[in-house]
Picture (cartoon, rainbow, N blue to C red):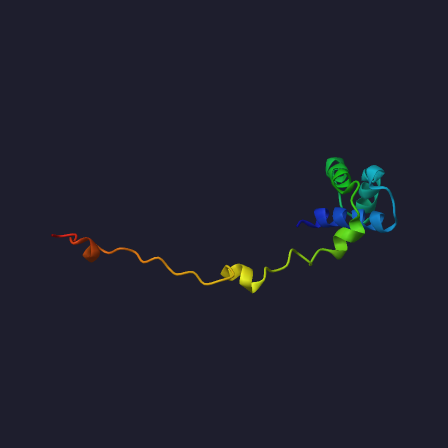
Length: 99
């Protein structure tokens, strides 16, 4: 992730922690990134603000590493053992490749 993108992400997190409504946050994101010394184009700030609009950013941050979890071992193994099907060989059919 480029440092400008990371600065915009941090700016949106700062606004979310301050309970600032992210609907109107694009100007604030630009102001924070400019104050940090990054030049962010306004389109990226508005896209980020629209992407986070209506989302609980604090909840997103707390669930970053949780993932979906691993399935149970029995579910991976299929729950029970199945007999493997035997492949027929040329000997079983009564002829070979070079007969």
